[in-house]
Image (cartoon, rainbow, N blue to C red):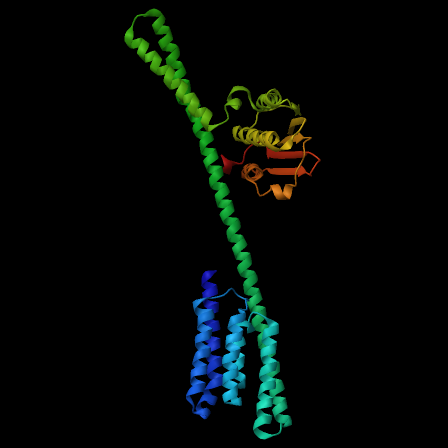
Length: 379
């Protein structure tokens, strides 16, 4: 949309230049003086300073510009009354943005022209009044049309900016989901290939060592195999929550609540409802991370006495509910923090939702729900 704004500015500059020439050209030729030329050039330079070099935001009215332009116009008007309509050039930058400013310019132009005719001839004919009214009506219609186009363009620009921001946010979420899925894939591949392979090698070398206990090379090979087995398990643990590999999501949640009770004295327990069934590995991993983040928030902020983790198996859906009876908080103010944002992003990446219910002094509830199987695009 920057190109649109530059194009709009160029048309505004052309509008100002043409209007300034139109309103001052004839008067300059009739005046035949140097001072009006200097003042008109000064008005053009003053406009350039504020709208070419500085480029204020659309619709913004710099008061110094209006005052300076008004003084230059008053100087022209003092030299010759025929320069009256030149003053409208000062308002040209706002005719397309503000209807009221445009209408003031139109009325001033019509009234100024009639005053000039009266000043020059001592009278005003009905024909001149009719011509002035027609010009004012036509100009007012043009101002309204230009303003409607400008507002429509501004609204279109806002919608395009919002769409672009949404697309960028979606692309970022997809990148994060891709990274998470790749980490899960690597963890599975390492566990199913290298880790299992090293475990088999260790078992074979241990059997061989039982037959040849004093073989130096066999001992070194066994030590190297054990070290690599340990390292592969460490890498898998870094790539995905280790508790899930050992015991699954329900038991991992029970261990999380037990640790919270043991380490803080908070009464915490886990409830499992519905019929247990296998869940997608990524669904389990993300729900466990949400539970860990929520429990960490309880530790740091809630001052709670009781925490309940509820895992509910529903048809095609799994729901995790973390409730505490602590001090609570304002969800709208807390939404800007990283913890809730990260949890919400994790749910949205897998087609789920995150709901936070809380109020000061009323505890807090975090509800995360996901399809039981992760979407294909999230794998």
